[in-house]
Image 1 (cartoon, one colour):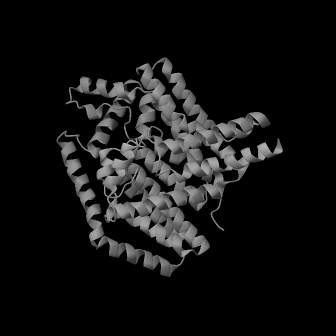
Image 2 (tube, helix red, strand yellow; image 1 turned 30 degrees about the vertical axis):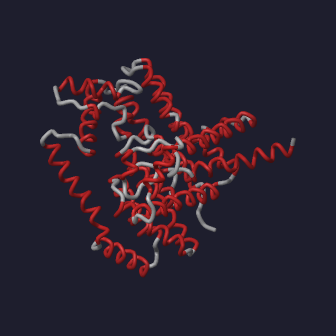
Image 3 (cartoon, one colour; image 1 turned 120 degrees about the vertical axis):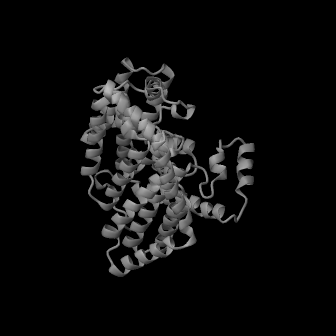
Amino acid sequence: MLNVMSIIKKINIYLLPIAAFFILISTAVTNFFIILTVLSALIVCIKNKNFSEIYKENFFKACLFIYLLLMTSYVYSIADPNEVISMLKKYIKIVYIPFIYYHLKKYKNEKMVINFFIYGSSLILVLSYVKYFNFTRFECFYEYIKFLNIYGMSESIVNAKVIIFQNYIIHGVVLSFYSFTCLYLASKNKNYVFYILSALAFVNVVFLNDSRTAYIIITLLSLLSFYKVITNNGTRLAFLLIISILLSSSFSENLKNRINIVNIDKANIELENYHSSLGSRYIWSKVGMDVLATDPILGKGIGSFYNSTIIYFKKYNKNNSEKFITNNPHSEFISISAQLGILGLLSFIIFLYYLITSSTSVMSIAVSLVFVVSSLLNSVFYDNMLGLFSVIIISLFFKNKIKLQN
């Protein structure tokens, strides 16, 4: 019996690290092992009769409260039952946080999770450069896995220059955090391999990828690292010199193109042409504000944003397009407020308040920056991988749980 329990414990220790390894590789695998992690924590919790440990923190209570609001809003939701079920499945990730935190506390495998995250992200980083410089034909690779029916690959990923399995937003956000983590490890452990990995990830995100969300995140993380991680003035000078050289090199063309696209998108919005990433976000924000104006307290219920967009276009006689009809407004603030009104928005702000104020270490601040910016520009919990990535890093660094130093 003892041998069986020992084997189960060893297996449980590896569940979350495996999930972290596959973040940039497979949403399905990451989701599977996170669910196993949560179930493992739940079983241990039931066995030890200590549910108070799961939700004793105000932050954890905020997680549960938001999800309870979503479930309760089904009573008045204008969404179809299928949309309601779909949204409940997506937002269940917010309830994972206290269970993953409990799992980490129980098995004390935080550093293993970080190591596996670095291994998996480093693999994708290397493959990203291999793809960018055409060292091998990735078209053949994608055709092969498509033939084996291993993974459904969209054309946007196949045709992209640097992303491998996840979309450019996930790729950029995860590698931004990876770059900062590697820099932090390098500064604490005097390991130059981490400096190299951090620099490679930085170049990949800023100069090779196309995610505006990632640009903002890595800029904020760079400022944080400049003041909190890099303490030597000589290193700071070298840091600025390298960035200046990169900005004046051919690598900066992609970044300049993205800035030009933003200016073009802004001009099109003024002409009521919303067929762009920025234009879509603009019109979805208008839908969200319209919902708050008509149903300010409770919103229109879980899964309602899809029907809210239809109502908005009919109400204002605007030219409609199928691309605007969605349950994903690409902003967690808009998504929550449209579904749950001011009550839900305040609950989410309280959630963020507890997240930000309960953690003061450099890594915890980095997690807060990543999550807040991602929430402003994307529906974090609606997106499967961005949500899974968020719950892992929040659980890891909540209340300064671990310090990355050997």
